[in-house]
Length: 226
Image (tube, rainbow, N blue to C red):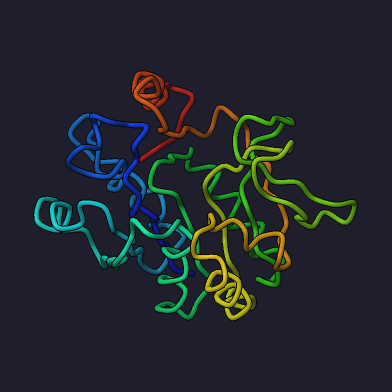
């Protein structure tokens, strides 16, 4: 499969840290989140691209990312448009990661193994266990298929997953109709199963208060991260 990192958004809640670059290009111990994400994905994908928008000129000049895709009009759309660009360009299974998420490498090992066990027939979406209603969430039905996504009571969406090549055409059609939506809207509308992951093996950078949490997470001897 191929990898894609979605990093086109402005990250307003992280200001002033994102005044110059998107969240994926903030640096920790001399390395950007983007660099760490690429290293995490490398064992499981045949190359990783990154979708840029906000401050893309700065990112291209300062960091020279591998295989960039620029979303023109990024400020008019949500990240559904970012995933659509990647799917239009890449005819393959696509491992999608939000630009503000880091994972323990064991999580990606489970994701890859389960996707392979399913024969690539279903999408997978990462979720943090435990019902909640404060973050965007995933729910599924009695058959184990994802049935709802959004600001609902459910399991927190963990910012990563796989869109199977088998459902690429349907996903592109859905995203074209929902450019002002968040890309996980494809999961309830195409055959998708959840992948529940331990909360402590996932960290997300949303607000300045998350900076210390991310540093502590990276420094923990219980975490395996690039």
